[in-house]
Image 1 (tube, protein in one colour):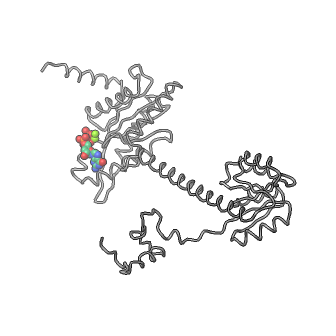
Image 2 (cartoon, rainbow, N blue to C red):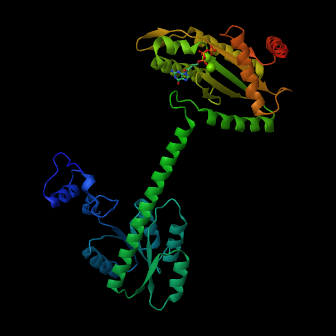
Image 3 (tube, protein in one colour):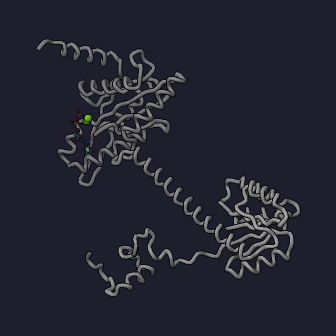
Length: 373
Ligand code: GH3
Ligand code: MG
Ligand code: MG
């Protein structure tokens, strides 16, 4: 392996620099550990423990012992006081006395463990030595551990340490879960978007159509599809280059998005072909809409690095309900057929599925197809 610039020739120096701030991670893991060495050097902030006990002497004693071990001790003299403090600033662990005035320890325990808005706070119940009933009830109510009074401090210390370790693991796990779920969300968004234009990709568009189709059927609401295709787009690439073509595609999809309503979906169906889904829209309105967008495109000047150009588009429009459209594939095909007719009959046009022109043109091409060769 080639030495990195500035790397030391003294073997242990590499590790020292890793543990410091140079971030040279390639030499960092001596035995395949995932975490860089410097993680071990970072000091944890002192842990905050809330001691809830109605006997000031008990608090005093616990404070002295635990502070000597580096913990920060906060105290509450009854259950109500404890709850207030916990909600103000959740501690890392709670040492909870069962017998307290106002709200007793058992009730505090129940409320805290039932509250899902709180982070995980380990709770150690302090019970009287002769009260195994309290201990059982406490564990049932969700206490993480218990300690009998009079307290054996070495035992308490061991239990505190172990629960804080569990809490740290738990927090770590929760953070990883959050990261994973955020990464998942990002991945999901990327999987739905067309990389070049930022509109829906074909797969997602078809999923949306599936959903809209079902909705339209259930509520008997109309649903329109507009298929748009840039006219002679290949010439843009041929004359100005592929990058200029990309810029035109981006600006074109922006024009479509600007024209669409919030509830509509705009997506790239393929190359320079885009599809719009217009829920709650009848055929007439969809044609009017498509005609407006056609004009927007016709009057738009596409600009790119080395110049500017004008382009037109052709559209095919179809909508449900219609006797010839019985499923979502038929709806797409109807819009696609209409787009084909728009191309065939001169481009820069909007053709409505099932219009006289559409039917005549379709019939004449069908006749052509039937001519024996
Ligand atoms: P028509 O009016 O019949 O639609 O003609 P056209 O030239 O627009 O259609 P044709 O299907 O012949 O050509 C489409 C072109 O679109 C060819 C293809 O290279 C180009 N294209 C497809 N995807 C992209 C893309 O992502 N970027 C660029 N720059 N060009 C693309
Ligand atoms: Mg085209
Ligand atoms: Mg095309």
